[in-house]
Amino acid sequence: MNTNEAIPEKKFTSYQVLVIVLLALTQFTVVLDFMVMSPLGDMLIKSMSLSTSQFGFAVSAYAFSAGFSGLLTAGFADKFDRKKLLLFFYVGFIAGTLFCGLSTSYFMLLAARIITGLFGGVIGSIAMAILADLFPLHQRGRAMGFMQMGFGASQVLGIPISLYIANHWGWQSPFLMIVVLGGIIWLLTMLKLRPITRHLELQTEKTAVTHLWHTLREHRYRTGFLMTALLSLGGFMMMPWGSAFAVNNLHVSWEQLPILFMVSGIAALIIMPLVGKLSDKIDKVKIFTVAAIWMTVIVVIYTNLGPVPFPVVMIMNILMMIGIMSRIVPAMALVSALPKMQDRGAFMSINSSLQQIAGGIAAGIGGLIVVQKTKTSPLQHYNTLGYLIVVIIIANIIQIYRVSNLIKAQKHSDKL
Image 1: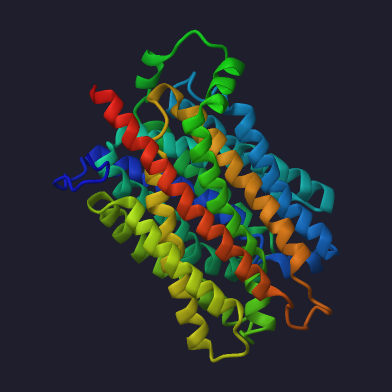
Image 2: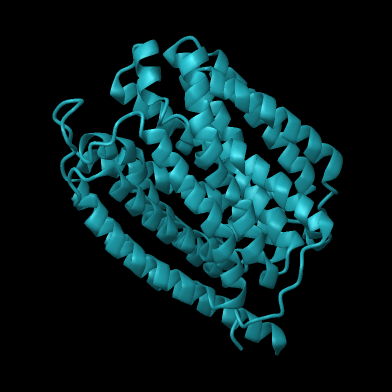
């Protein structure tokens, strides 16, 4: 039996819609907090007299602390009500973001980014576990597609608004805006989200450390972890240098950059629900494979571009976003079917950790490959990154087929 065979589409209940909205809003704030560092980079470097290496370390500190946090909490992730876990980490994330907005020195900023990463890095995995608990597999692609709209919204609304208020009230203002918005979302989540405790009924007497070790030992789970790490490697290898490549190689002006972010974000907002819906009706592996092949072509073309008209840059970014989102949505929906319910929180935490750590490593590798002689000269060897990403995408296609086969085998075993 095909694990992704067509099932009649069932509408979400009003409560399921509420859950998706709340989780999408948390994703919006967490993603914006992480992504806004890049467009604020020039302002931060000048106002705090930072070197480029100091700024780079402040960005990567978030990724590595988020990865460490996920591994640290994985053993405990299935021991508590998922609602309480979400509220605990989200309030820590808000506190860390407030610390960022109040920072007056490099070391305060670095400490604030580490704190924000420790709490914020776990929120995505908790949200994924909640969705996997509350939505059956045949609805999960749509649910994840809508939840991931927080990513697109952070580009469409979050980054342009953040840049606007930063220009008027300083680089700290976007972080303070996130704190206010996050406080409102935390309160709504506390009042509206019901306890999520079904997984507790399936718990064994394993300690947190034993539970973590059991999750890491499981061969099926490790296959999913590797797939997620490969997915993250390709994206993070290009992302940190995207603005610099657009400005210095493609001759996009600083005034055009917010428009570029906005257009890419709108594309993501439109694409994600469509791909989510498709992935509930069509084989998720087929969608991923087509999108991956699409990405290999677009990445090679884009990373070899020279100065081109701005509309061409926008079109290429839209085509790139189609490929990125059409891989992420079906891949995450499929990998969520690997863990048993009693292991789901630990699995998602480890999965999120490896995603963050792989991202930090990818950014480091990208920094070793890409060269810029002066602050205004074109980036060199950016196309080398493109070719390396193609190799990673091919490995990712192989890995998603392995994940799909494991899920099919498990379903067949459960029927016997």
